[in-house]
Length: 307
Ligand SMILES: Nc1ncnc2c1ncn2[C@@H]1O[C@H](COP(=O)(O)OP(=O)(O)OP(=O)(O)O)[C@@H](O)[C@H]1O
Ligand SMILES: [Mg+2]
Image (tube, rainbow, N blue to C red; front, side, top):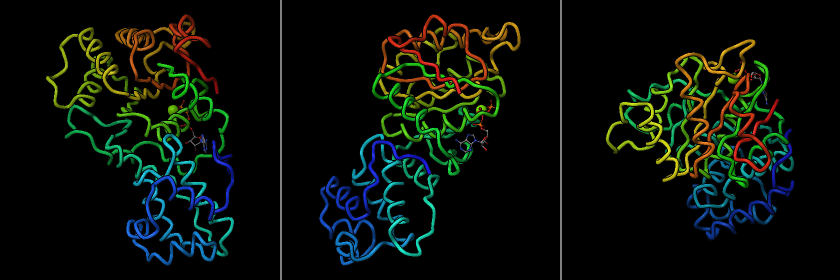
């Protein structure tokens, strides 16, 4: 079981009281939202009874929707509540369903995240494509890495964060887990995989359309598109996830340099690292782009986590 970030292993009763306290709802109002009788809430808060799994889900959803979980910690707090019941209630064996809660988070934000979706043909933001991203329900461990990445993105406001490591080591799963953890702190999350060698101009156009669906279409030139993207990254807080970044890098001896035709991704990363804005690029790669040697560092806005 993973260590819960920022959450002490409190008992269910204390947690239930804490989360209702944050919502400011009365027991009756919470009961209404969770679709249970007020006596159920009284029993839970009085330490007399525990909710069954089919009642715990709507209770957690009600807490979440009414602001009962701390921003940036929704998932860990929901899980802590579930696990408290699992520890204390006899015969409660249903595991916490992180995918379900993830969907809830996504639906609430109205953003989509999709590795493969062709945004050019999408009908606008939707959360229904999240199912194509790796399922993180079985995600285990990596507590220290999650905490460090969270700190880089939220506390230190790093503008580019890379997860680098050998194939199959867990980069994509960690990036997905992190995107879900951090989603509430962002206005948009735009997830693309470069696995099928997505051209930089196409990526830029897709990001622009997603982040500003009502605006005029993206400019024709890559330079113009990058400028528009930088403007959008200033106007809203966007988490731009680039999975499989090594696809656009040259393998072998020239590792870290770009494949011909994909050099613009170097400029994209560099400009997003160096300009002032409120967004963040999260990328996963088997190799570290050569630009990073000059851009990364403790006092700089680019960080690299080696797995
Ligand atoms: N934290 C984790 N908890 C549980 N399983 C994991 C974890 N990390 C990785 N795995 C397992 O390892 C597999 C590979 O992980 P992942 O796809 O994230 O690797 P990767 O580093 O992105 O690989 P590639 O370089 O090929 O893209 C996952 O499908 C999953 O089965
Ligand atoms: Mg991967």
